[in-house]
Image (cartoon, rainbow, N blue to C red; front, side, top):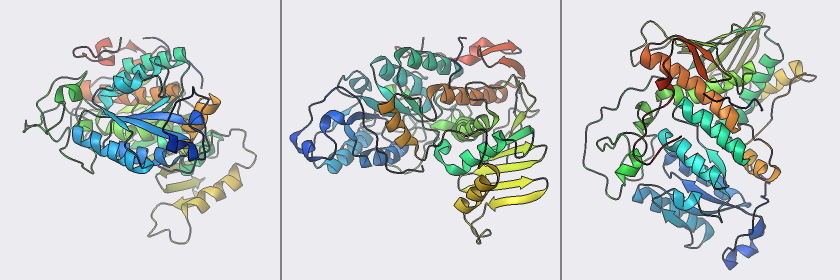
Length: 445
């Protein structure tokens, strides 16, 4: 496989504006604080639960103009259009069934992609090759082949791609990783990452089709399965659909929450755009509730999938744990900071605890990590500056690859040696595990 280039929802208001080609917008827009020619003109592809949260944030930004939405579910698509139209007090938002109506539209500068995982790479590639900047939900790709190719294509076209691994824009994770990177707990020996179960082959019972749903297009590059509301729920729902728990369309909790926590582990280990050199499958690898798969790095650090605290870095001089809204530091057996259970840790706050650790250990730190306070604001600012965002394509791809490697261990009971630079098996693996069989016209070459 080719080499990934070795470069490098906690939201606040952003002040980004884009250097983009002028776009003629309705006259009513001219009264806005930001002139139409300066706005980042966006389309949204995938309009389910996750997209609704993202769209709310983008719509709040005065530098953004949302002009189009796309979904294969008519009900969801029209609901998104209505939300955009209500926000702008007009009826101008276009709605499409085919994502290419957005990715090939020359008046659109950027897209937000929040489809099921099996569509991410294909839509990203179409957007990038048509000159768009991209905000794409994690995991960035469905498989390793797609991750490698996407990095190549984004680099070739010099586009901005932000992966929606929003934990990197939360202070508790950044401070934890800075403490680790600056040696506060000594030499790191292990990392425990906690998330749920593996994906299994789709076996959902067929039910009556959702009216207005283009099911063939929903399945897209994956197999054409019998329709099930488990995969694509009917109506406007408020849950995260279980397509993610099928191998055909997702990667289970390994690529769902694992894409968050392994991403933080990679950050803390200084392994962005890198990865493990060995993968170990647990003895009971084929159980849906299996735990214990391990990624082993060249320096000997062992990352293990466990039932635990989120992300726990274990060093020779202590431990640091972090999760959303949770933070704990133990140095040489002494508790230094703790905000884990708000009902128990009532005498303090999350911000107080990580701020105290910054003051004590990081005032003159040699290593300072990218400090983003808002994943979406960072993306918008980078569209203007043309600098790489906090979770650039290379970072999002390498974190996704780690998740895919773990899934390979679980799905095939395989332990193997891995080259994280060439993204190839050194021994013990089958190259066909790096990709998938694509259906019809949908392929990642």
